[in-house]
Image (cartoon, rainbow, N blue to C red; front, side, top):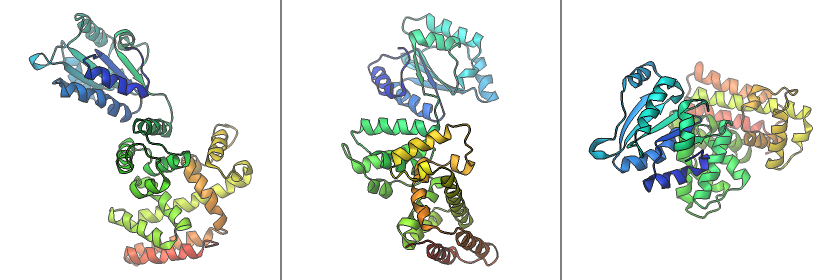
Amino acid sequence: MPIFTPLQIEKLVDLASQGRIAPVYIFIGPYPLIEEKAKRILDVLLNQGSTLEVYDLRTQEGKKEFSQIKGYQEGLFGFRKVYLVYGAEEISQNKAKEMIENLSRYEKPPFSWFLLSENFTEAHPLYQYATEKGAIIPFPSRRKEDLLEMELTHELKKNNCTMNKEVAQLFLSLVGDDYHHFKNELQKLLLYVGQGTEISESDVLQIVVPYSSSALFLIGDALFNKGPNQTLKLIEGLLDAKTEPTAIIAYLYKHFKKMETLKEFLVEHPEIEKENYYSAFMKKWQEIKGNPAISISPILAETHPYSLFTMKAHLKKVKNFAPLFQALFQAELSFKREFRKPEEVFLKLILDLWRSIEPH
């Protein structure tokens, strides 16, 4: 079992279910992504009766416990023993040698190591051992959003579903970069649409619950495209989810500040301002971000390209940002000084913002 790509996890799961189990699995990449992938194979072994021991070498207590274990053996009643180790890069050379010596005593070891690490070097003895007799699953050193896009493509293919690029970017922009939230919302969406489906923008907007930091995208989009009533419904949903009213004000302030900054940036870079297709816009945006000679404001650099693309279209409706910021300032005063009810404050705020957007 040599090096496997992340997309070959299913193959490793199938091999494990057939009893072809590696003595060492090394997962290299960001938590919790590698944790979830390791769990796919672990679940197979545990369902077969394997027993599990977990050690976290990212903590001092975990290192101490791990240093004290001596010998590695099969589980109860002859079942496989599985050792799951977090922070595996902390395994010392001497400990690695001890582990390999114990594995070498068996033609088919009755125990397995699952080693999880964000940065496990090729020079490590266990890495060298795994290249011959184990399985190494490295996740490419990419931005988190790139890894999620790769995972989305894999899950869609597995369910025989498709998304066009614009819908895929909408989905990714809504779920944010939290892997568990991404996974939960994708599973909900796939269950809703069923096998072999072309997933539409309407499907995504109807099913996907935005990550808290992505909720702003929906509010801003609704204000420009859906009108005040839909925007108020979204805000009511945030309030029902226990979001602080002042946090929503802060979201909106940042949204409009981002729009204002983008407007200034587009004046300097008309080559992306004229792009009306997302794929072309994203390509040029990435070229600009990759140019070290071009300075990009952090508020833009941290934003998903799809959000910037939709903001670009909305900019045509804003001639002056001053009334928008003034309306937000007054709403904040209503909370902090007048202690007014959130529904009253947001009703006035959204109507004031709506009147400042041209044309309707």
